[in-house]
Image (cartoon, rainbow, N blue to C red; front, top):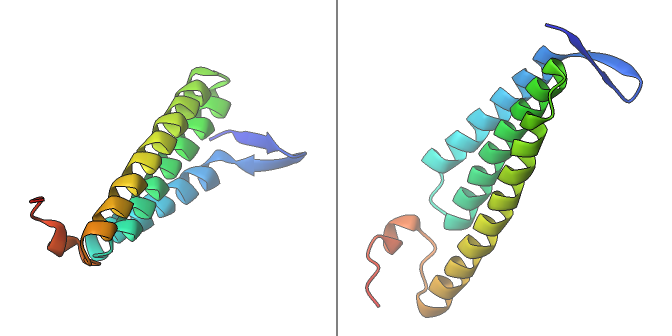
Length: 109
């Protein structure tokens, strides 16, 4: 693996890939273990950011800008997803008093 020049210091790309893998595993564990819908949304965002970190790392290593552009598009979609997801959660919490994701399995009005 080649080294990346970040802020004047040389860092190996494997450290960024390891950090991305750890963040992705933490996000996946949060989605699978937690029952709060807000924590699940935050865990999904963490997984998306881990994928973005991996894309940017490979983009810098290969001296190619397409990975960075794809990460930028992914962040835009993630921001829109977070806004829509939070709006749905606020509406659900206003109409129902449910804090568990299992209570939301029925979408009857």
